[in-house]
Each structure stands twice: as C-alpha cells, then as structure tokens.
Length: 361
Ligand SMILES: Cc1ncc(COP(=O)(O)O)c(C=O)c1O
Image 1 (cartoon, rainbow, N blue to C red):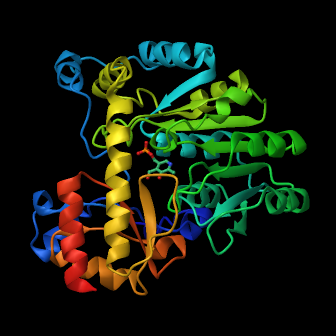
Image 2: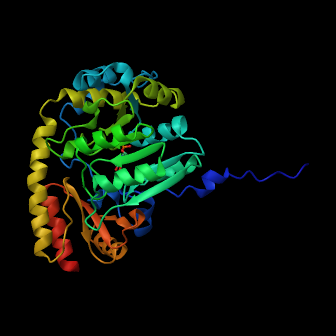
Image 3: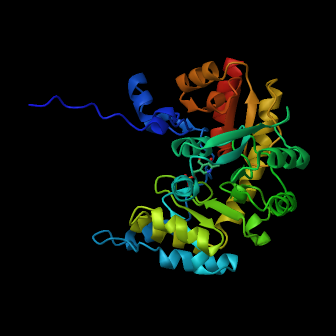
C-alpha cells in the first residue's frame, strides 16, 4: 500500500488567526462545571429584552420539511420597501459574519490591500487573511476615535481596494458621521468601503450610510443583535446590483434557513419593537455606567449600549466574574488586554453585575 500523504491546509489558512468572540464558550463552561443557563452574558452586544412577541408564531409557521427559499425573496422585498431599494440591491446571509466571508471570496485577490480601523471586529482581518491579501491597520487615537484627516491620509498612502468601517464600532462604540463616510468614499473612488452597521439600531437617530447611494459602498446590517435572534443568525448587505450579484454567486445554497427567514419577516413587521426596547436600553445603560463609575472604574464614552472599561487585567477580571456566573468580554483579542467590554442588559441583571464588580474591586 502506498504511504498516505499528509494533507496540509493552504498557507493562507495556516496564517489565518482563530476566531475569538464573546458569547458563551460551552466547552469552557463544561470544563468549569457551570451550566450555560446559570450565566448572565454581558459579552454579547444583543438586545437584552428578547425577541419580538411576533417571533413565536413565526417559528411555528416556518416549514422545515422542505428547503427554504434560496433567494429569501419575501425578506428581501420587505427590506427593499423599508430602505426604498430594489430587491437586487439586497442579499441575505446566515448572519452578517457570513456576508463578510462572501465578500472575501467574491472580491478579494491575494495582491489586494485592505484597510482596517483598529481596534475592531476580528472577522474583517480573518477573512482578508484567508484570501492571502495584505492588511493595513490604522490605529485609533487614545480616546478610540479617528479624525477624518488621518483616515483620508491613510487611504491616500495605501490606496486599498477595500476599507472596512465598523459604524458604530465594535468594541469601542465610537461612530463616524455618514457625512464623513460620504467624503471618504467620494475622495477615494478606487476603494470599496464596507460599512458594517451591525449595531446602528442601538444608536437612536443615527442615519444609515446606505442613503448616500454611492457606487463604492456596501452596507452590512445584522438582525441578530438588535432583534435578539442570535440563536438563528440573520444579516444582510445593501449595495450596488453588480456587487450583490457577485456575493450571491459565491454563497452556499440555501444559506438562510426557513425559520430565520420567517422570524426575520415577523421582526420587521413589529413596528414598535425596536423603538420601545432601545429607549429602555438607553436608560439602563445610563444607570449602569453611573453605577460602574461609582465603583471607581472608568467606562469609555460610547454611542452604543456596549462600552469598554479599563480594568488593568481583563483576563483576570473575566475569570473572577465568571466565578460569580457573569460573563464579560476580555478585549485582549482586540489588542486591548487591559479592557473588558460590557453590553448593557436589563436593570436587574445590571444590578447583579454591579454587585459582583463591587466584590472584586
Ligand atoms: C461588528 C460586527 N459585525 C458583524 C457581526 C456578526 O453578526 P451576525 O451575528 O449577524 O453574524 C458581529 C458580531 O459580533 C459584529 O460585532
């Protein structure tokens, strides 16, 4: 018998870092002998008020013994109406994370450069690394913001094919006004701007960059967090027809399951869900930030319901909170080993976090 050859992953795969995210790590909890149900999870930036009441019926309605609509037509039509776009300008993904990988697959060549405004969501760099392209990082100022000037300069010097702008940014909660995005995209027409608006709905009155209608802008949205359906995953991209068609060409067939499509539609139909829950969340965030400050800690300013807190040793803080059945995000993977990220939850849950923090600090 011939000796079997060891099959190695391609070099780009070997160089791609492992993914590191918030959310419960079920294996870690099993090692610690903790049940996932015991944990209050502040490490995921989801709407803590749970899904719309319409969702339960939608789950019942979903037909699961046949393949789902591979084009997600009904959901795209509902979104087309909401954004005043054409259906062909919209693609639905199994979460926004899937769309990022479709972008890499469809648009990124090994010779390309991609600009990332750091610190930010780790999947941009991972998907670019997988394609073997080069990553340029522009680091935020000490207060985690950027000036339009420095972004302009970096774009001029590096002339990247893609620029990722997470707006509002994860993990910092900082924002760039659509006016600045318009200026950047207009001044650098050779660059495709990927504007990740996964958390836009958590900033009341913040306009989407899709309204700019520019040809070199692809806007990503997630329904996973704001509509509290993380267990289902649902995201979409809005942009020029040719780019959306390219993404559709590389997506796996039936990528969005029937339950997610029904639930997405039902969530959009609930006209008051977001306004009600987000305004409650703003009040809860204000109280939580005040409570954390009263403990002598300094939460960083943030436009969203999640925010960074400087704690010196984030891994140790996370560990101590986990012992108390509370999970926060250790931001080491964002290059911030002295910061944790906290996403506001309901007031009774926030009280439990404050009690635990008080014991520790
Ligand atoms: C900025 C950002 N974009 C996209 C995603 C992925 O969203 P989804 O759960 O819809 O895939 C996340 C999730 O953490 C995120 O933080």
